[in-house]
Length: 255
Length: 233
Image (tube, rainbow over all chains, first blue to last red; front, side):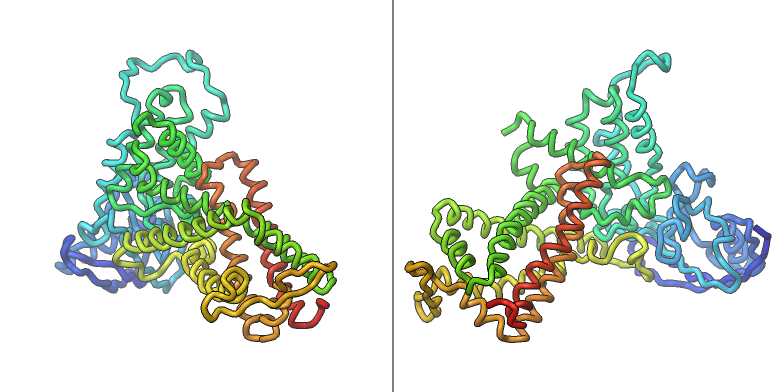
């Protein structure tokens, strides 16, 4: 595709801190290259703001290659912008046309309070992982690839689930602010592998309990999460999570 | 994990919705099947006999209690889940994701359910109250009809009477449309909630759900319509 440059109008959410009420502010950027990433466009805007002596817009970013899950922007009514299966940092400006107005909002969920501007606090996800999203035995050195036979299909499904980068787009898109797609990816990833089997039951019970405690909603299978997930985690994993949970809960020894 | 912990967890609450939902689907099959007897065109004889069987069989009367309990649970739990989920996002988006991520009816189960509930109140008043509670206080009783020398409650006659009003017919048809969309999401979603993750089985369930959500509400809607238009004698 041919390179072109564009002038854009940006409506960006500004909020000083968690207790500030926040509001939209309008900015104009000129000469944005179609080859830039969305975050690079924000860098240009921030340079401009610094030169004008204004406070730059705070936004989360880290790897800028689509694998860390930090860049959380809700662009024109869609987490991570208009492209399918893409994080904000991998969204390129060729997705937009000259003269476009782009509205950028932070993730909206009570479990993800805004820290500043577009940055939200996603510690809730860390707490869910801490509740059981791991294998707690010391696995030692990496073993030979074929020492532990795993069915090919299961390995693939597990790998697909492990692709979850914990960005929170699923929560941002869900009408219930549910974290079920995230949780189901983490549970599926481990439940499908023999290494995850011994802690299968306690893992899913503890992680769901933690999710509820963090203030996420429940899943109503609308599929919005699946549609926006940059790693294309499927809704199927939520069904697997339900199966794992109900199986573990109803066979519990407690009365 | 205690029972209380299970049923107060987010997955446990959805489990209750799915289980009651599936049993209500089973009820719809019975209901539509029995009502379809009106199309026998025998002045309601087959239908009145079937209604008599449903009303006079002890096992079915016991199941009726279960049905009411299921409906009540589905309603109360549904309202609670809807309210709770709505409270999880205090500040909404300037531009909502809308239909780009999900179907409008998947996001409107609470609204569709409420419409069905309003219909149910009217529906129970029309038919259940006179047939079960007729004669108590000033609730009117069903008329009687004689089939093969035996006396039966004339529920068919009641249907003919109620569906003479175009407003009632319209309300029934609108309720059937709400039910269709409620089922279009609810049927397959219930199985997802119960843990159906196998892609092949899910495709089958989803297809059955789609067919069910179209055929059953159409069959229901055709009842008041065909009575109103005088297709049934």
